[in-house]
Picture 1 (cartoon, chains in turn purple, brown):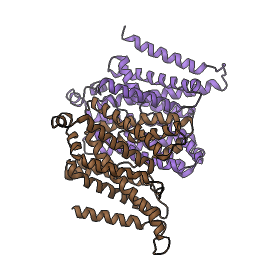
Picture 2: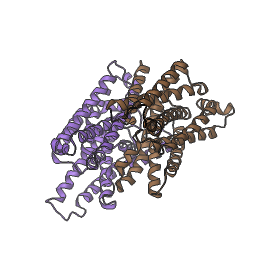
Picture 3: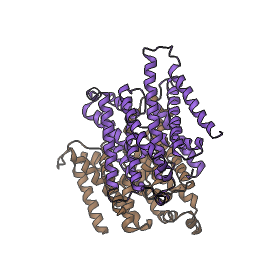
Picture 4: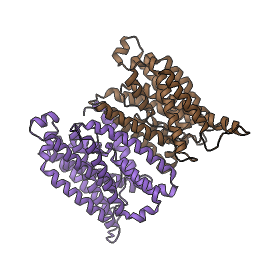
Length: 316
Length: 307
């Protein structure tokens, strides 16, 4: 019974935050304000589930609690794509592709990217996650330079378009994208649900997992593919969220006091959604849009990350 | 080997002087082109190349990790934050004042990074640069929080893209600060080699460990802030060159430092010439060419070492 309490508290807080977010100052305007806010809430839910699921399983696979899949270069690829679109097509890229075209294109490009690096790295059978990490790191730096160059060359008007893509926010989400996102998340959940127990075993480490009879290579590739799909959806939907995964995963472990994925994945989603709603409320009502959700989350989660590193000496 | 390297370097220097939008002829204004633009540019290129690669070596010895350089230890983001601070607090600041801000923030950030890394036990060496990148991300987030409010995000991006086309007589001289830094590094090279062996070993060999680390960080901070202020950030030079040199010549800094410096300068010169002829008569900023050339080299290094 005692173990249930923090979980109930988290879900209660999230529900409360959601209610405040939807109804605060809305004046029961069911024509415009409330539907718009519900759309954003939907984006937060889908994004939150994606981020929590992808970072918790990624940390299980790497056996490391200070990593997030964002570090593997997905967000760099997304930003480069947006920068190239703006550079080649100008501000008309927004009109030309339409918001759905852009969303789908981003998802496809990120999936192709992750398929490419996985295939290239696993081709001779050695699945070293740290090499993957190093390659992602270098690609992040290289692609970052390209993006910087493009950002410098475009006009201020085009830059503001680009900037709206490069900072996480919920404002550009449209209902059809939510539907696509929800479909992907549902598909991933269906596939992943069966292997939750395998994930628990994988968290014991590579050797233990193999000696307990898990097809290690197959499982790692399956889960990396699921992570790729989730990161693609969340990044195209909301934009880059860098550190958020670390914060979500670690506070989830602290709250759940267990590493069983059946518990942590659900609780992590709640934490991520709650964090999104809280950040959005702060942006809307405290900072009055002088900052963005992305910057706020980066500040909070980045600071938390540093504190975590110092307090736990890197072995949380 | 030494003479071969020197010959390549000299060749690159001459090429760098001769390449450009304005053809050099033996008439009236050739001398002006040379003294006002080409020679300053050459000096800036060589100094930056030397400074960045030496910086990479020092950092790698201080942190005892081969993947660390200013870009992967938060140094560049710290310099950016420092410049932003100077703009916020002293809007009319001159270049030296801005550099001082960048230097102080850079040094403080470097110190914090080293302390952080020392506290953490790493399962894999790859994690150190990952932590460094995240650390840089935090510093960047602070800068962005301020920059977004004041709508200077785009200009802030510009500070960090390495570009030598703005180097002309009268606007780049601060980069000469790298010269004494390199001399100092060379004088202390043996101590940095000892630091690279770890605190216990260095202390038992009679080294004042904290003082040497602080000195190294100060040297790095001066170099990074001087380059960021005058030409912008150039990734990978500090990463690729020390690794390639160490693969062949080992880690004795007293012996390898000249080779590292020479190779760094040569790589930067080559990247710059490439950037200048690629879309002649315009030019690609060196941040871009060095970023891609260095990135490809580094990826090749990773794959080759994995075999």
